[in-house]
Amino acid sequence: MSGALWHGFADMGAVQRDGAFVVSRGEGAYIWDDAGTRYLDATAGLWFTNVGHGRTEIADAVAAQLSKVAHFSNFGDFTSDTTVALAERLGAIAPVPGSKVFFTSGGSDSVDSAAKLARRYWNEMGRPGKKLIVGRQKAYHGMHVAGTALAGIPVNREGYGELMPDARTVGWDDAKSLLELIEREGADAIAAFFCEPIIGAGGIYLPPEGYLTEVRDICREHDILFVVDEVVTGFGRIGGSWFASTRFGLEPDMITTAKGLTSGYVPMGAVFVAPAVAEPFFGGGVWWRHGYTYGGHAGAAAAAMANLDIVERENLLAESKRLESSLHEHLAPLAEHPRVAEVRSGLGAVAAVQLVDPAEALPFVKTLRAHGVSGRAAGQGAMQFSPSFVMTDEQVAEMAAGVRAALG
Ligand SMILES: Cc1ncc(COP(=O)(O)O)c(C=O)c1O
Image (cartoon, rainbow, N blue to C red; front, top):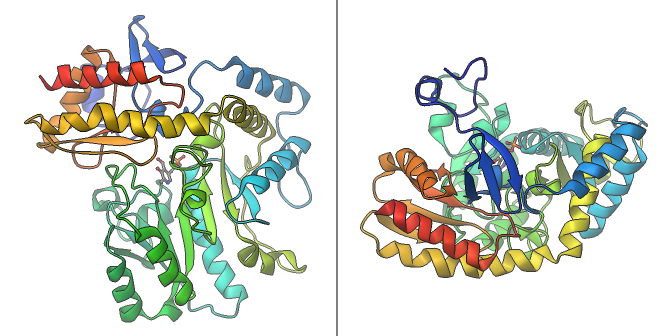
């Protein structure tokens, strides 16, 4: 029995029967369980520990901030000096110059904030009929109501009744299906299209060549806000750039982020809003009645500042690009194994080893642990690889050897 704790995304009967995997320490690309056994962390937690575990520099920055003032408020005219400094720093690396930064407590907050803002924006522009929010099959956009409704993983929507009637789904890799939806519903009914540059939790699917700019152009042509969900890809995971939007020149109307902003040391998210979308709210006399108690939390902002310092000082964007090649080099050969259907890799510090039989994925996670690798299943039987940017090529090779051994 694992006691009072109710885990997310879990069959708690199974967790209670088999026991929890309790992580008690981390350093760099390694974690240790409560029995003292060491594992390579193949996933950087839930895709977030970009700078690696055990960074006392971030802990110290948070401690210093909490001792000064932990947080106060980010509503109305309140904020903190550290929050302002972080917003300026993010503004300077934003893919769209002049962007405004709206802080949240995590990725789901960022997504639902962007969905609400898209609709409010069109309302301010005198087009209140533009309400539909469009997502893609396989997409994951967090677990708040709008994000769950607009994502493309139907099983996550089951059992609640209709969460948001104004959500629509199109093909994940097919720009034509977006055009067909626009023809069917009318551009005057559509507020925004949400798009992960690399589909993450839905199984790690890389965008087809040219897809991202194609859907961006379709959105522009039809006055539909183009929202890029960079909760996973932001802050370096795309490889070589701060954002996938920078790497692909997407210039989105909004970008949703979290995870890598603080490397998950404390929770924080942010929505980047392009000047044209922010403008109606900055002219005076218009309120956006939206915000979170912990939005712009000063302690979280201090963690983000220290995290970004590390990324810059240690050239971790370049390290992430190195991992793009290294993961591909070491994992792609596993595609020949009879239990593996395909390996998806070669863009960003992410990869998937797709098992032939999706039912094998959960037991495989446990077998993999026995070979010294902490992994995770995503989508329909894909093994997720998204290590911290400090994982060395030797450790990638060791991780791939662990996967091969676990495959048998
Ligand atoms: C693309 C994407 N959007 C949103 C979220 C939700 O973020 P959070 O779990 O921090 O609420 C996630 C989480 O994995 C994600 O991958």
